[in-house]
Image 1 (tube, rainbow, N blue to C red):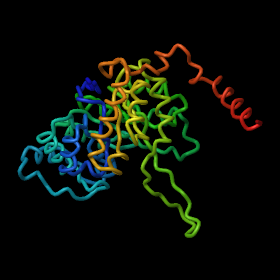
Image 2: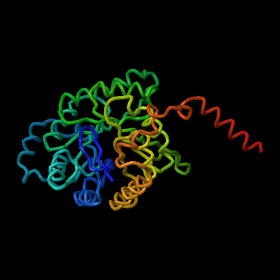
Image 3: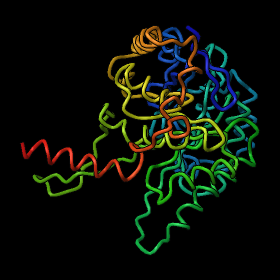
Image 4: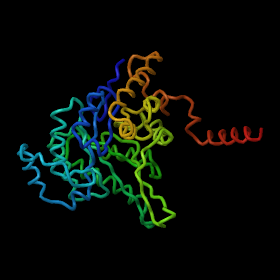
Amino acid sequence: MNLTTSYLGLRLRNPLIASASPQNAELDHLRRLDDAGIGAVVLPSVFQEQLEAGTNDYASIGAACAEVPEFLAPLDGGPYGLIPESHLALIMRAKAELSVPVIASLNGASASHWTRYAALLEEAGADALELNLYFVPVDPLEPGAAVEQRYLDVLASVRQAVKIPVAVKMPPYFSSIGNMASRLVKGGADGLVIFNRYLQPDIDLQRLELSSELELSSAREIRLPLLWIALLAGRVEGSLAASGGVESAEQVVKYLLAGADAVMTTAAILREGPGCVHTLLAGLEDWLDTQPAESLEQIRGSMSWLRLKKHDNYVRANYLQLIEGFSSVHRG
């Protein structure tokens, strides 16, 4: 079965991508993912706060990058155990040892001098760049247009700095997701990752304080990104990568049917280890063997808005049908 796919203009051997996680800072982990058959890897994000708190002398970092033996510093410091200099070294190491595309990641919320670091990620050998834009608009007076402009400004700043493909990992909280997706693509994004997953605090009733715990996604979270992949596929230019809720090959298949070019997972790999990649791919091939198809391209997007003739499940009318159906069952 031909599982090859195109994402951000990169040719992948299959659509499965290991999205950014702390473990992706370890070369041995990346090698195991490669051996298990992953299509591409996204390295841990470099955060805006790391860059703004550190040196502004990007030229000196670039010069250090040229002196590779001296530049391979221990991977310590920062939220993911990385400092900017050693992150560049990680990219070089990964590019030298892996057989699959290596995608770098920047995590920020506003455009400023830190976006120039994108050029160094490109110089270090990254095949593409993922912008993980994370901004919670806590000011109730800030209009939605201003929030949207933040994302477009960061993208424009990074786009000026690099020539490699750029993907934007966008949140699901815009008032018009389709419009914002189109604007991001027109603003220079080669693709979109649907969706960024915001941390959400809880309240500790014993200590009476806010608490935040990192919870891995589960299959029940697939429906929102699945909906928007299906609505956007073929209707906006650029690649679409699905993110969130992948526990088994079942979710991978659903995302592809909706129209995803690639499917990203972190939770499954963190739970089960790199070996789960082989399991996911085997499950995908098993399902494809039951279909009259010889490649992914023949089934990709077959359940998208663009391809389906009947749109009831995507529009308001279906909500009324669901409510009526639920009521009739419980009356009986």
